[in-house]
Length: 264
Image (cartoon, rainbow, N blue to C red; front, side):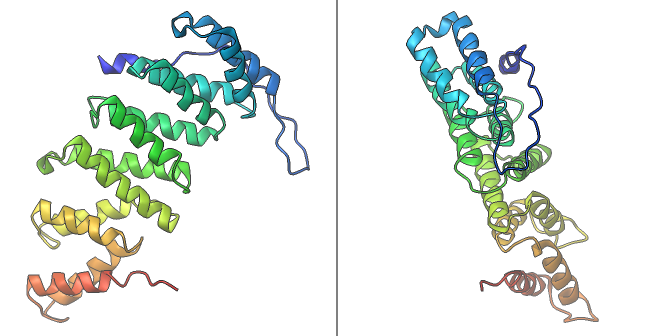
């Protein structure tokens, strides 16, 4: 049933191209954004908004420049249909009306994948908080954060043997997204590459739960961790290298991987 709630309300507004300018300014069709927002709220009788409230909301949205009304409508429609109280949905939507298109799209994507039953199946409150935390409270690139989140969600769904709950997967996704912000680089693929080597028979051949915890721990050391661990482990286990036992080789690889970055 959750799937049905995410058909966002389409708007008939045509977003005209903004004229080019050599000035370091952003040109805005503010009147259009105000009018589009006003008409939308006025038409949604179930919101039971007073006319003055509609005017105040439209005024706030109009300050968000191009596509502000669309961002507001998309986020608000999504949340209301998910069961968020109208006042709370409007408050969040107003916030994203003044963010970038990428920021709003990141919020929408993360909320959907956190909330939908086929994904993390979190309750609406947890999904709302998670989406806001990752798309608004972070300083990193919104698209990068979204990509890392989706990469980890797909990892959780594909690895059924790990039996990861929605909240646990959300926790892992948040950590990996944080690492991405730290290094200003997508880290989801680094984490999954490292986990694969840690758990495959031709790699370190660890139990999946051990591989998971170690991959989370080591990924904090940056985008070179997967390569450093693999190179160190293969050299340590080789008879032409250090000729270590498996446990010794893993310890050596951990040590080398912990040096994947230094603080200047």
